[in-house]
Image (cartoon, rainbow, N blue to C red; front, top):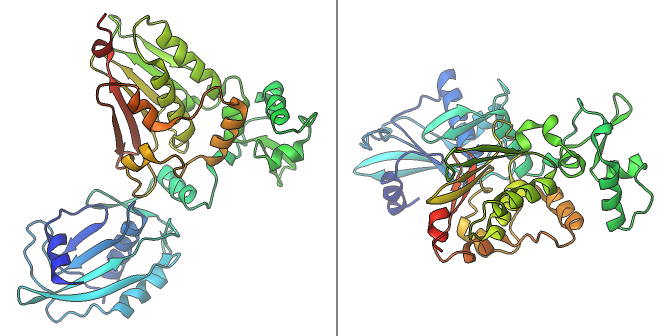
Length: 379
């Protein structure tokens, strides 16, 4: 690393991919644990390369240097191989600045996330400038991102196959030229609608199957619904929208149509489709929220974009990486072109006024902010 790059990092504040340390004693157990924990956390956090700079006071950025302390690459790599699973690759460099030497540990982008501490089994990541234990949904999101698990095919062991509407499944099968196969459990298992449990020698529903082919998934998965908060009306009424994905799309469209105002409902519909198909279903703490106000309408769903994907790229990219690819493909087949997935560009082009797409990785939220009722209801 050259001095220019180092000075550039020194101008930045600590964050998910950057950590300053005055010193770390990697000859003792506590120091080794701290080092491994911070490297794992940076590797697990979203984004590209990360850096730990030793010899710099984190608050003031005063350069203290590392003195005669040795931070050898082989020593750090060895402690990682013993403590990190799967192992991580780092590079250690020494850079002279202001007549002092600092140590820079470069943590490369990992394609094997999530990494965990072998000794404790814990997964770590960075919350801003702090290293913290990853939550269950965050671990699941990392596993899904790297293709280790598939969210939509998650088995729901506490539910029976009776929750399915066979007519909905049969209609889907006919669209893929599978006639009279609604009772073929092995086939439905291969299609991801059922899951075969070897321990009980029985079939159970999958998350994606229930979202698509159950009349009221919210009886079993309450977080999968939509909450509409109408701040435009005098009573500020709250409406809870329930049903499978297609039912909820229709109900939201009908809700806005019944408001009897001049508003591009197709744009709202597209935002809702985007939220339902691409939300993070591992986050069970909140549903999709639609705030209807005089100044703006906000569709907010759990599930920020993957990695360093820029929102501007999503607007113009007709084939972006998708969180729930199985759900997306089944939706297209069942829908038969009725609710076209026209993307963020369609939403943006539906208004003369500015539309915002806000991606908040820290809280795992994606928001579509459209003009409010007053801005368009002028006639």
